[in-house]
Image (cartoon, rainbow, N blue to C red):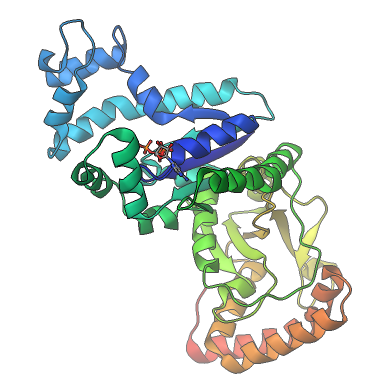
Length: 393
Ligand code: ATP
């Protein structure tokens, strides 16, 4: 099963996107609707709301008087928090129940207006944000929802700003043009990313970028790492796991293969094996076989063992290295990164090597093997740099 978080500011077109995803077969769970259902007449939720705020929030027919409740919590953060403590856990429980009832190969879309505000982003395989310019949204809310422009503006101000919401987005859907344009973007997302992503999670297939091709450094790589790391930490909670951005995409300004290297630090290889299933379910299936890093390995005993996972998301290739915290391989990945960040000459030398290799290597395995001798030498230079600067991992 694939869990997608869908959000967007009021009037952005979130519901249109959700409806289009449902048309393709997604199971849509609408948080707003659940938030109403959990306080319907006769529910435990309504009883708690009345116990907290008094019968003044009830209509004569026993249903919730939303405007009255709204007036109480509006501008009173404590009252609002109290209301959320009643509603949110019930919505979460109901969401989990509906998701559990979906088919094993379902693509579940959780439509949550306040997804970013509530901090839910790391709980999904992917977060999709629908965005539209403020003027477009105000225009739609006035036209379709009977709001005045001022009301629409107030509602927009009460939500997280666009920048914060968009920082949580793995996929941004622009909805400033017509409906057909949004539908087409959703169709492509469904076909090219969600369908294969779901299958890869279910069948535990990492997406492997076999082509040895360098791309220009993407200033968004660190933000992408941050979102992936939050997802990994969420999958491995409550353990406090160290997750680091390593490899070339962690070195600003360095062209690289478009693969984000992530290092997850564990206490032992047994722990690495114990977390493998959770990583796979979160969208990071493990590569079968044995993996090790060995800049120099005079004997087998010197091999630095690790576990290697990839990403099930065809839109974001990842190499996820699980290494023992404090082990030579773990330390080396951090040392290499920091040395390359600190030393422009090493960076250019490494880039020249990579460029030469992509020109001559038929595939990614030959490319990786070609880097080894350079890394052996770089290891010594990096250690000298560490000794001279007092570097610590
Ligand atoms: P809310 O947060 O209030 O639920 P929303 O993000 O779900 O808002 P929608 O209901 O999907 O927003 O869209 C707001 C209004 O704008 C709707 O009436 C919808 O039909 C209309 N709309 C959405 N996208 C477009 C578009 N591309 N062109 C024209 N109208 C649109």
